[in-house]
Each structure stands twice: as structure tokens, then as C-alpha cells.
Image 1 (cartoon, rainbow, N blue to C red):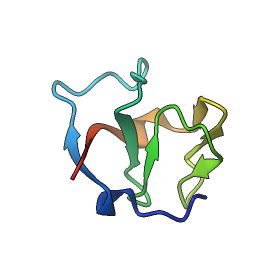
Image 2 (cartoon, helix red, strand yellow):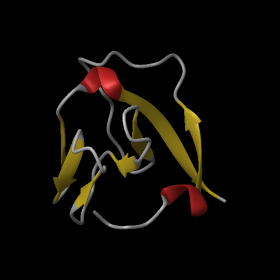
Image 3 (spheres, rainbow, N blue to C red):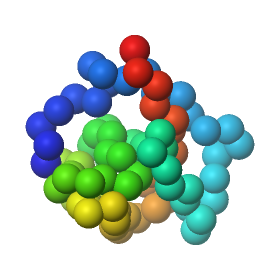
Image 4 (cartoon, rainbow, N blue to C red):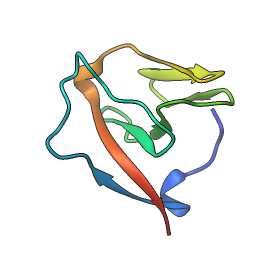
Length: 79
């Protein structure tokens, strides 16, 4: 939704060990990568954000994940 490729701004590292799909962490440096479309969305988006396939969507600090099994949790660091 934002139209910004987050990989141009941040380097992303998978969180190890991978969290359970039933208990996904959130935070200012926690992002979710959709395994279907490959887009990355902040776990607590302040502006309207979504991945292309619609698995991840949210705004106002809330994110809805339709299928948590299709999400990789990553930590983002500015390049």
C-alpha cells in the first residue's frame, strides 16, 4: 500500500529461533515478510500498509495477518 520497497532502506535478518505462527512478536524494528508475494510490512504500521496478496494489512498500529504460517518474522536495521 505504501509503494515503498523496504529493502532499499533496511537490511532484514530473520529472527532466530523462528517464532510460532500462533504468537508473532511485534515492535518498532519487527517486520513481517509475506512468503506468497515477498513484500515486507512493519508489524505495527502507523500508516495504511499491506502486501500485494493481502495476507498482511493494517494501519494505526494494528496489523492483520490472514495466514500466519505464510509469514517470516524479520528484524530491520537501517542500511
